[in-house]
Length: 179
Image (cartoon, rainbow, N blue to C red):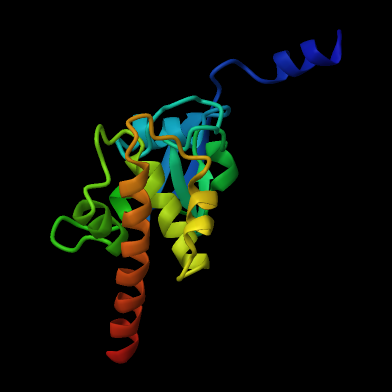
């Protein structure tokens, strides 16, 4: 029997295994297919609609989530590979009553048309501003270069990221002042 056939015999198609995830601060114990992507688990099992299916290859950014605060493409991340790590989706950033500063900035700058890319744009912006609170326009463009917007709202998105940087710095200053 070849190595490929032995591997196929050892692992049943669609085999389910326990998977313990921490999504938006909540522990989730699930039984998911061993080959399931994080995006499929988030959308299908946890009914979170923030991550969008775009290309399925990790190239368009529609499925972006934060894993331990760093942007990652959920369509190419195995769900079992991120057990116990902090996963944040768009739904976990803010609430209707208290938007995250990046969400607020995107609304104020009207940085959306169809909205399909927004999940990735917003989460990539959060990741960028966490690492670099005062990015140049060139740094913003570079950080967002792997996130595609087919509607052409790039100018508004750049303005939203700049506004978000100001809002986040103000938010951090006021949080620091309250201590």
